[in-house]
Structures are given as C-alpha cells and as structure tokens.
Length: 280
Image (cartoon, rainbow, N blue to C red):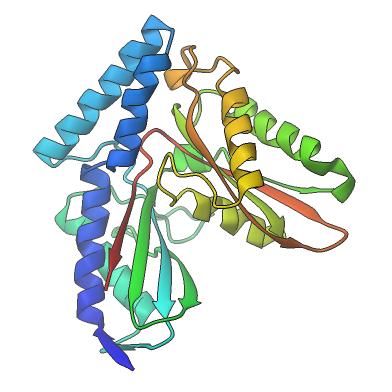
C-alpha cells in the first residue's frame, strides 16, 4: 500500500487553484484561436481577440482571468492501493483550497448557508467527487466553476420514447435559453443516462475533458460533432453579440439507464473553462 501524506495534497491543491485562475489551459486558448478562422462577425472577432489578450494579461501578471474565481470542484481518481496518511482526503483538499485562495488573493465566492448567505471567507467547502480506480496513484482534477455559467444548468427526466431526437432538441434548447448569460463562447457538458444525480455528475465530469477531445465512443463522438455544429448556427456568438462562435466544444458522457428512464443533464462552462490536474 503506497502512502500519500496530506501535506502533498494540500500543497498540490493550493497551487492548482491559483494556476487554474491565472493560466488558462492551452486547449481552450487554441480553440479560441481556431474560432478566429471561422468567425464571420467582425464584432465576434473583436471579442475573441479581447479574450486572448485577457488570457495573456492574466498569465503574465498573475491576476485572475475573471472576477469570478469560482467554486472549487474536484474529481479525485483514487487508486485503491493508496493510503492517505496524516489526515483525511476531504480536509486536505479543503485546506489546499483555503490556502490557495488566500495566498493567490482570489475572490471568496462561497456562502456557508444557501439561504442565510454569509460568506465562509475562504472559498471552502469545495465540491469533491471521488472515484476509486486501480493502481497506487492519486489523480486530482480541479475546476474553478463560475456561478454565471453554472446557473445555466438543466436536468430533464425524459421518456425513453423521446429518443435521440428528443435529447438533441433538449440540449439545443438549453443553450438557446442560456443565450448570452453564461459568457459565450461556451463549453457544453452533457450527461445522458444513469439516475437524476448521475446525469448531473456526468455533465459536470465532461467539462473536465480537454477541449477538442472527442468521446471514445464513435456514435457519441458523432453526436458531439452534430450538436456543436447546430449550436454554432444559433447565432448567439461571442459574449452574445452575434456570430458563429457560440460554443467552443460540446462533450457528452453516458451511463446505463433504467428501462423507464432517460435522464439528460446540461452543464455549461463559460469561455474561461478553467481545469487543471495533478498526479501524486
């Protein structure tokens, strides 16, 4: 059994939350640059160029890409041959978030009670999902999830008879309803199957996938391509000012479903699709 001390986790998380907010992943930046080649709206081109300038300023001056530095969301792939020592995993991740947001002067966006609305002051607690996998390593995936795009999320318990055409219609309608609110160009995450909560988790998990990387399932990869093309014909465009570039990508994750159910969830990321990972 390999041991990983909580101090390693704390240090890694503290660095990840800052890097996620300062240094946008190359996958997203490349997608914006590629969009400049296809965007027909001059206003849309101007917006995309401004986004690229903003990313560069954040990276070089070590300031957040956006004022909304996000809810810290983690997916931990925990090898079953790993033993966390010196404390527990949840406490270590939250301590890393606490230190990272403090040391990086990142905005604290979390309220401790959803109705009383008092800020916790340290951006904790994080949202933590743990998946047990083979091996003796721990892979930590982190996303800084902004509130504006998160609010444009939808779950629908569809009927199996709605079929794939009903699923397509629902997903496109979600993006149409969201319009400019999630700060397009967006990344659309979709979860299909499982139960109510599983579909929502799948939609979130899909947003951790590298932009431009298709599903390993051929039929789902084709569905991703088809939906992305249709969404980019809605005309919402960069920042909702019109144009072809409404979405940079669309990812779908699926799971087996009950014979009576067809749950579908849509979770949207803004253009600052911030995600980092580290292996311990």
